Amino acid sequence: MNLHEDQRHDEDRLLDHSYDGIQEYDNPLPGWWKWVFWASIGYAVLYVMYYEVGVGTSVMDDFDLQRAAFFSAQEAQFADLEINEATIAELSTRPDLMAAMRKRFESNCSTCHAADASGLAGPNLTDEFWIHGGTRMEIYKTIRDGVRGKAMQAWLDRFGPAGVLTMSAYIDSIRGTNRPGPRGPEGKQLDPDDLIFSVEPAAPPATTDPPAPPGPAVEE
Ligand code: HEC
Image 1 (cartoon, rainbow, N blue to C red):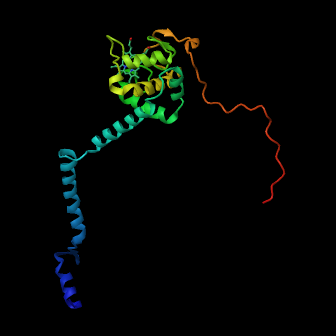
Image 2 (cartoon, rainbow, N blue to C red):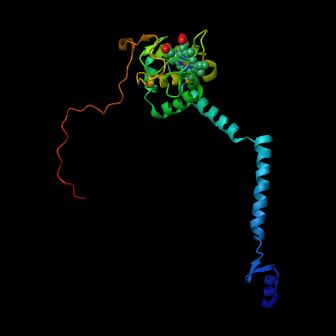
Image 3 (tube, rainbow, N blue to C red):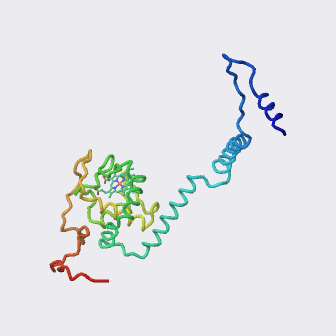
């Protein structure tokens, strides 16, 4: 193609009408751009057909699988632990575990106990008052077995022993934070002496030694 032909080809694409001498130029999108455009539409159709309608694993399925894998890994990790006050107290001091349990609480328990556990149809779990007892093992048993004849179901089938254990640790971690709820106190106030085992929040190691005086500068 010589220069002359090329120019004529460009002029061909000038549209007929002229506005005060200004002519419109028909400048189509490049072929590669249109190709990508149609390919992305085709891809979207195939994606929906495969992942949402067909046999592919959708984002939600994938999420469920990953969540199930997370909880069964946790199950294995905590399976050998003895279930007692000390174990629950120790688990309740693990920040990563408690963050995961907060999410689990929000998705399973918030309809009745509110997302911040301050109570709705179910009692406030952040105060010092307990209908079924507020020691760690009593809370564990309430979650495991539920309350017969009340909306509170038994969670053992759903969560497994490790899940009930770690959920009890979560309730332990929020017990006594006294978030104001709509229901007011219900049940009996927990006597701190009934807590067979209590852990204080991690304090810096107590040291009676005065800080060491600065030593002579070390030359390297
Ligand atoms: C469908 C509603 C509902 C859901 C969901 C629910 N609960 Fe409950 N829960 C209740 C009710 C109602 C009670 C009070 C039972 C009673 O009055 O004896 C209760 C009581 C409790 C208690 C004992 C409170 C006390 O004062 O002794 C604990 C602990 C508890 N729930 C934890 C949980 C946890 C953890 C979850 C989520 C895994 C959960 N609940 C999900 C309705 C629910």
